[in-house]
Image 1 (cartoon, rainbow over the protein chains, first blue to last red):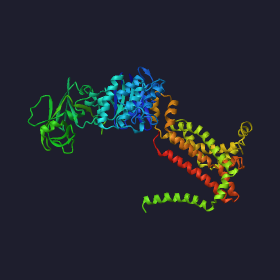
Image 2: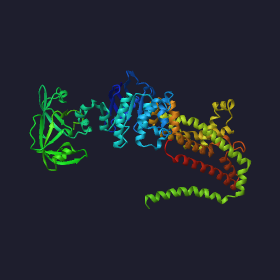
Image 3: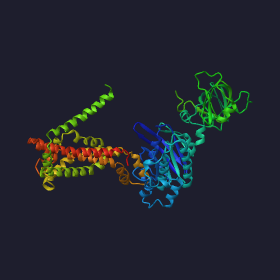
Amino acid sequence: MLEATDISIKAGRFRLRNVSLSVGESGCHAIVGPTGSGKTLLLESIIGLRRPDAGRITIEGIDVSSFPIERRRLAYVPQDLALFPHMTVQDNILYGARARGIRRTANDRIVQELVDSLGIGHLMNRRIDNLSGGERQRIALARALASGCNYLLLDEPLSSLHESLKKELWFLLKDLRRRYSLTIVMVTHDLEEAFFLGDSISVMMEGEIRQAGNKTAIYNRPADLDVAKFLGIRNLFNGEVAEITDNALIVFSKEPAIFLRLPVMNSSSRLMGVLQPGAKVMLGIRSEYVTILQTQAPQEASCCKVEGVIEEFFDMAASFLVAIRPFGCANGSRPVEAEIPAHLFYRLRLKKGHSVKLSFDDQKVFVIPCDSRGTRP
Amino acid sequence: MNLKRASIACAFVTLGIYAGLTGSLFYFFREDVWWETLLSERVLFSLRLSIIAATVSTLLALLVAVPAAFALSRYDFPGKRLVDTILEVPMIVSPAALGAMILIFFNNPLGIRVQEHWVQLVFTVYGVILAQLVTVCGVATRLTKAAMDEIPVRYEAVARSLGASPAKAFFTITLPMSRRGILAASILTWAKALGEFGATITVAGSMAMKTETLPIAIFMRLSTADIEGTVALILILVSIGVAVLYAVRLLSRNKTYA
């Protein structure tokens, strides 16, 4: 288990404040956040490249905060991979073992297995400068794993690859993690990558972890407006708490005109003690949870319905993003966005100017108090 | 005249200054004097002394410059800015002043003690080496630091995360990766030592067949109005300099670390 507790570190004018994270054995924790949020700085302090001003780092219960890099046994793969250009592929892969004084050769069973599983056997005598991006990634992973470390720290290692190769390497990383019981901490700004590879996620912004934990919870219920925006949620509306009952939070929004009864089971449960009737809130829902119904569709009791007109739609290959302006909403206000599968879009024969009915699944609507981050003017 | 043309014209003006000066040497060039000068015992001694002294002073400078450059490139320590500034002193202070500083040091009690008990430096070959060393040590450190600055610290971090000690990371990663830069720095340092005049003549004097380096020999020839002999010696020095610069160009042509 790897734990970083209350890490604070200053780098120029930037400051990392009381950052904590924990990764269980054989787990994968993804740190996501916009550029300049402090993700790499956190990773560098875990590796030992930067000494934190406060906080501690423990690996399997041992405080390694004062250990030099080489004693932490954390294999680091930086964004540019830092393959040693003056060595062959084989020398790169065997570097860690040799540095630790392990007599390991290219014929060693562990190395051979690793090389086979990564498909780089034919590259062993090549130099680094004339390898492709994908080959370099594999060699960087092989080098890290051949060093005998079970902890892998990845700093946006796949960011420079094209989509298909990136996805191929996602599966490879999953496979390697299972096969070698690896514990991984990875930094990425690619949400898809974080959700695919990570068991848990931390969202970092301005040197702080704004939200951490279960990836599904973070995906569906961001803790504050900044996190919601970073996660790409655009359906965010000003609302107000109408009533708080024992088992529900009743909220409404004027634009679009919606009235929701949010059950205790969702984000409203942790807010019920905080919010009072009349409190200003932001209501949000991911565009894929907004359903487009034809206007003559029958009413369902559990859903909130809004009617409007299709203002614009965007083809995203597998799906369509449809912008709908609810009736009664001012022209300057943000439309409601619904992401629907392409086949459904074509089946519904949706066109600009069509009147449609929207359904908001109240299980998926989240509430952010207006005094939380990013909601203040 | 647009910016492009004006800047290119300035580049050719620079070329014209040096090419013109070098070309004008050939007005006084006489082949018989060239061969006679080149093969004379005194000039051969000067050439040998210049090459040996420049090589020794460069090696000594590198012994200090490489670790010092690593420290300046990789670590923060009290006084770092001061050290960094001092490195430029030999570049801004006249070599004659540097030589005078060395002479003054050897007239201090500590300097007198060094000369009496260790080694006689003033007016000896060792003085030539010391004068060159003092002149080039800062340059060697500055150029080596520039070479090491080009190697991202991540490479060492990765090496250490794989289990290498700081020393192992230095010898297996930093040093081999910056070898081209260090080699180029060495060559330029050597060339500067070879052409050193002011400090050398102040510390070691201009004794024929003893402390007379090639630049000092040029000065001595000129002071006796032997223009043809001076031209021959200048051409030898210029040839060595051009060859060295060409070698540096070849080394720095490939910009990868490997």
